[in-house]
Length: 164
Image (cartoon, rainbow, N blue to C red; front, top):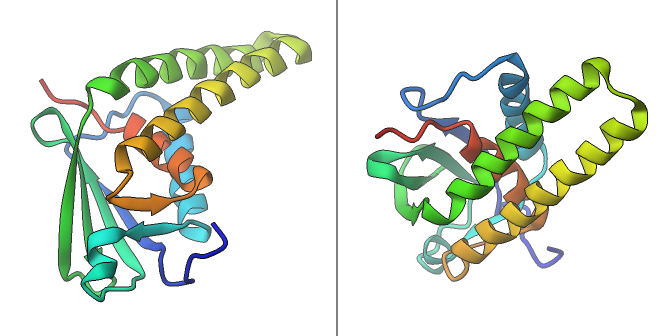
């Protein structure tokens, strides 16, 4: 989004270590890459914080308390601003589909043809794009972001373990 101030961004992100699902090395690599890419380039404008005069950059902590996604937003020096809670029911299917297609992708990399890998990767990107659009929809009125940031946040949501 071209109308974003350079400070309307995430400067630091953490995931609740108690809820991270350590599925395998491939998923752990996805997590590392998503965090790195997110910090390098993102657009993140929490509406209420900006209206209250906090123009970032922001720290973001993701967790899953009581089956809901919590996005704890704070100033760069750690002053809490707000915590957004999103129901995860609408994300369960995209998360499940994303993990399934990622597993297929990682298996294909090891033994499939280039065309088979490309087909699976296209399906993986489509699921990822749809989930990013869903996240942007769920954040509407709360946080303005761009598609790339939403995609990376969805990757991080996927690696959080939903306790229950």
